[in-house]
Amino acid sequence: MGYEGLRFPEGCLFLVTGAAGFIGSNLCEALLRMGCRVRALDDLSTGKQENIDLFLNDPNYTFIKGDIKDPETCMQACEGVDYVLNQAAWGSVPRSLEMPQFYCANNIMGTLNMLEAARQNGVKKFVYASSSSVYGDEPNLPKKEGREGNLLSPYALTKQCNEEWAKQYTRNYGLPTIGLRYFNVFGRRQDPNGAYAAVIPKFLKQLLAGERPTINGDGTQSRDFTYIENVIEANLKACLAPPEADGQAFNVAYGGREYLNDIYFGLTSALGVDIPPIYGPARKGDIKHSNADISKARELLGYDPDWSFARGIEQAIAWYRENL
Ligand SMILES: NC(=O)c1ccc[n+]([C@@H]2O[C@H](COP(=O)([O-])OP(=O)(O)OC[C@H]3O[C@@H](n4cnc5c(N)ncnc54)[C@H](O)[C@@H]3O)[C@@H](O)[C@H]2O)c1
Image (cartoon, rainbow, N blue to C red; front, side, top):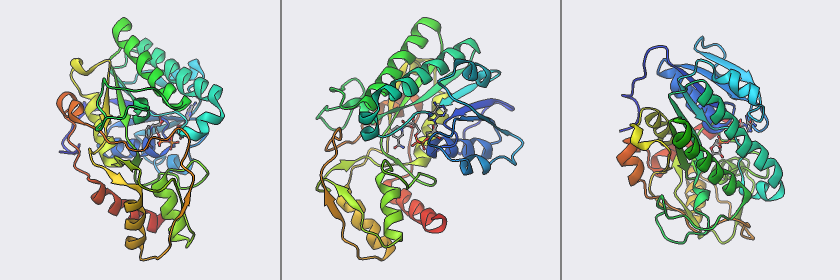
C-alpha cells in the first residue's frame, strides 16, 4: 500500500514540470523525501514562487523558470533525466471555453515538446497528467478506460490529444509513456484563490473567512475526490511499471463517490460554522456524476490507494486551518 517502500536507483534524476503548482510541488516534496534528485520546471503562469522556495535549500533540488511551449527549454530540461513527471498545463474547464487557442498551444504543443525532448534524451519513462474529463458525456459509472464519450470542453480535448501523442511516441519512437487520468485531486497547497479555483480549497477558504460559498447547481452532483497522496503513489508506481503498461492511460482516483452537498456540510461541521451555501447555476461543460474504476491501474501499475476521502479531507482541513 502507498509508496513508502518504493526505491529508485541511487542518484536518479526526475524532471517535474508544473513544479510550482499543486500536484507538481507535492511530487517534488515526496521525491526529495525519498532522496531522489529533482529538476523542477515551471513558467509560474499559474503556479507560485512559494512552492519553489520551499525546496531551494535542498541540494537535490534545482529550479528552471521556463515555458514548455519553447522546444529548446524542454530539450535543456530533459538533459540527463531518468524520469519525467509532466504536470505543466492550464487547468479549468470554464477557462478553456474562454480561450481555446491558448489551451491548444499550452497544453497540447507544450506536452508534445516535452515528449520530443524526452525521446531525444533517452528518458526511461514519461509519465504525464491526463484527466477524468476525457470521459466527456459517457453516462455509465464507474468510468472505465476504453469507454469514453464525446468531449465537453477544449480542456478535455487537450488531455485526449496528449494521450494520443503519447501513444504515438511509444508506438513509433519507443518512448515509454504512461498517462494518468486524475479525478478531482485535493490536498495541501491547492490554490484556493481566483474564479477557477477547485471547490474544496475554495470552500475552505471562504468558510474560514466567514463568507458564504456558492455551489454551482443543486449540489447533488458527485465526484471521485482523490487525495494528493494517492496521486503521488500513482506517479511513482508508473515510473516503475512494466513495459506492458506503456502507451496507455489509467484512471487515478480512490474509487469512491462524494456528493457536493455532503462535502459542503461536512466542511461546515468540521469547522464548527453554520453558513448555508448559495446555490448558483450549473456550470457549462460539467458532468453530473463521475467516479472511477481503478482496476486497470491496480493490475498494471500496482496502484493501491490507501487514502480514502474521509482520511484525506481531515488532513486537508488541518493544513488549510494552519496555512490560510
Ligand atoms: N487538480 C486536479 O484535480 C486535476 C485533475 C485532472 C488533471 N489535472 C492535471 O494535473 C496537472 C497539474 O494540475 P494542478 O492541479 O497541480 O494545477 P496547477 O495549476 O496548480 O499546476 C500547474 C502548473 O503548471 C505550470 N504551467 C502551466 N503552463 C506551463 C507552461 N507552458 N510551461 C511551464 N509551466 C507551466 C503552472 O505555472 C502551474 O505551476 C495539470 O496537467 C492538470 O491539467 C489536475
